[in-house]
Image 1 (cartoon, protein in one colour):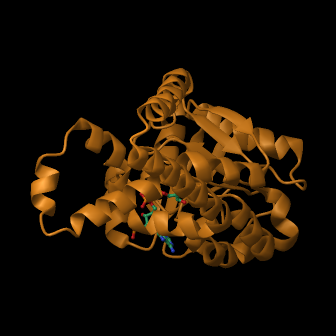
Image 2: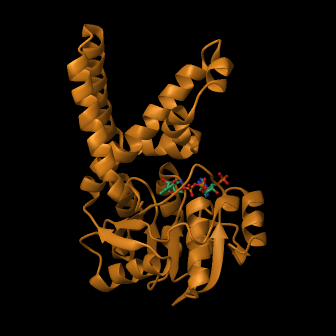
Length: 290
Ligand code: NAP
């Protein structure tokens, strides 16, 4: 049971975490801090929060559970601000989409208290953001990856894992470097590809005409281009190295495809499309769970 949960960054993910734990009946009080008072007032009116706090320090001072759910670029500063106010028995987790940068920032800010921090990443989300987007069932049946630290006690990891299980999620553990490499390929690159395509088309003089005629293929490929720009700026920069590698690979794949097209190589084009189509159909077993 959590006595007092502090949510720092009360948006889609942090708000949904609070609502899910409330629904599960495992949290006493939820306090929240954010940079935008209006969003916090909405969160309180929707029952996401019980109390709005004016500073990060005040939010964590009496909390036994803390969820950091701001864009990853804001975490170093936030961690520094909360560090002096943490209780000895407080456990901290985060929901950031990248892990190595977050762990680096946590080590720098928390020092001796690093064992109290268990990094996490829920594999659930949406293009919507803010407290109005929060919903208690967001993590139900979804996966949450924890990237525990060598300093974490088994009991600490188990407690954070229990919070996510109470939200209905299945928890797995992974090393942070591996996490960032995998998500560069299956999440961060697809988002950048969608942003790039939509931005390029939108700059054309006939953009409106083009979008007007776009069908379901375009809609499916570009849905994620409507995602939160600030959040994705931070993710891209935080996972820069792995993402640059994935962009290079993708550019090479497009260059190969372009060559086949230029050569009019029908057999090679069909073989490539068949490999991709078979892989995509096989993979839906996994995708249906996410
Ligand atoms: P969100 O809905 O925009 O919520 C983030 C909240 O944090 C907003 O209310 C924002 O304030 C607030 N905030 C931003 N900077 C802050 C700062 N410096 N101090 C205090 N509050 C601050 O975003 P989200 O989708 O919940 O994403 C939150 C985290 O979850 C990110 O780290 C992201 O990488 C991760 N994540 C997202 C998804 C997804 O699909 N969305 C999935 C998994 C993980 P404003 O109201 O002023 O914007």
